[in-house]
Length: 303
Ligand code: ATP
Image (cartoon, rainbow, N blue to C red; front, side, top):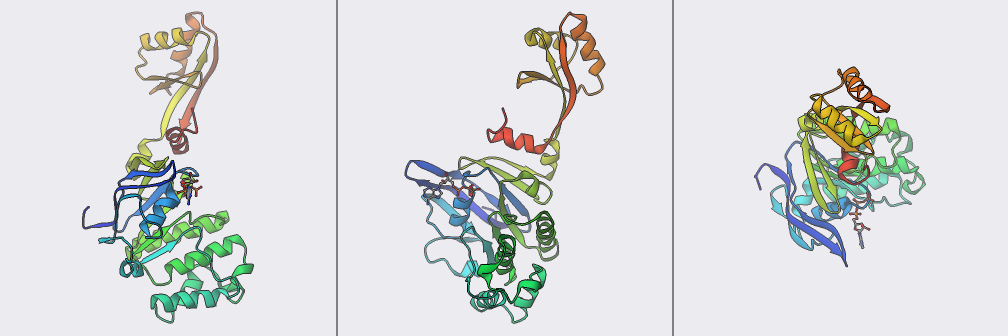
């Protein structure tokens, strides 16, 4: 672990009976970065986050948060961490303001912190309402307000965009970016929706079946955007050899089609090579494969 890491896990694992929820996970989240922990439902994100926060005991491996080893009884370091986990719920019979006031006292934050958190999360109109009566989206805002209230150095957020409407998602994204840029707050956030983290995170870790499949920084994310020409023709094997013979060096087969890379300005050439050899050409189109497709392919959702 580098001393600059906000979170480091070492061969972290957890199983529930025969089910391996988290498998030999080595994560390192640098201070000041926004790290998107991306995976489909059931990938192991919540289980990982619970271990980071010391809420459940790892089955294997270790967790360091802000340079401290997390174990039974670790408390002090979590005063510097704000978190939102699925089960975090407010006291339903207390108002939003009262809920935040309890959090303020627990964390020793200054008196002004409650009003600040209410303003930050735009909760003014429901500050005096009982937390249990709020819409799901506003409950989520209360949970985020609680996580931010004591101005933590590190935010660990499990699906922070859950239940928020599109405008709320953008607001939270801007808020997290501002906290990272202006106050150097480190953000570790999980999501099952790539678009939610692709425009925000400095780095993304893709988790599937408890394992970290890939980590990508901004530049690598951009490089994953691929452009190819999709070709469907009778006799695909012959079509592939004809195109290779015509000088197309990078051809992949998928979904019953041929994907010809570095070819977007050479579609006429592709058509001539195939039709000229007597093949029927049923599709010829330029395709822009985005990150979503890459993510789905990696995690088994797109063949
Ligand atoms: P989601 O986006 O659906 O919340 P996730 O990536 O957070 O998914 P986890 O909640 O960590 O995934 O679950 C990982 C796997 O472990 C799932 O198959 C889940 O059913 C299982 N699991 C989680 N908690 C328990 C538990 N307490 N007992 C048994 N199985 C569990």
